[in-house]
Length: 265
Image (cartoon, rainbow, N blue to C red; front, side, top):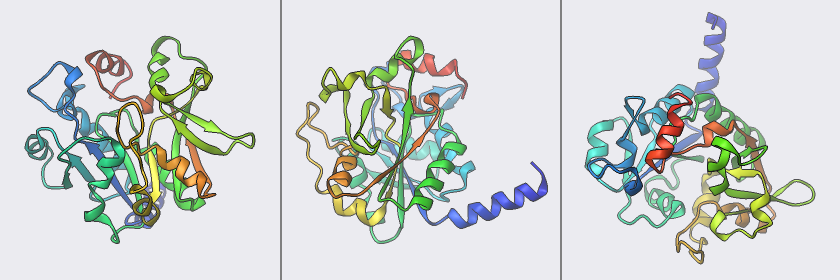
């Protein structure tokens, strides 16, 4: 990168910083990881705690100087490992992604313009993806911007995407709903556009609509993804950004940890 390019990057980062507040969800225990001594986000990936890969990408993107981290299981261990450079929000009960973001509302309402939600167990996210999601959200000005992944099939390493929620579009290509796999019909499961649940919201719209989420699903949880349908019901258009499938992969099991390690950290 030339000195001129560096200056342009620094200027662009200054323009964006302060307009986006990143929230990282990191409250889960990770029971399926096989390590009861560590919360999932602190389990090593390429020799470094999983969450630190994501936080490095956020830092390198320049979009947010001090991310919020929602913690729960072994909260003190996470805070001790990550240090004082973050805003920590404690989530006493883990009742879904929507509930996790609700936990941060009191701290952030009225203080920030836009909210980006990312996940502490997704170590392959890049700063490029974060910047792209930010840029599209700020440029298009929709109440909601979401990343999506498009797949040729669910074969080989891509079979993990079969468990993703499906992006439902109308005949004009507009997003009208996201359906979780456990709630999807057989026909909906054939859709090969998946939802990695990376979102940017206009903050005021987000806070006004979080309370409308319902937990009438098989998991009895509050899904952040249901906000896409709420936006559509309100005649709000949802912006989308297609990302590399590998960046959408998270770690829920020891098997997935090994899978992601083949792609690098």
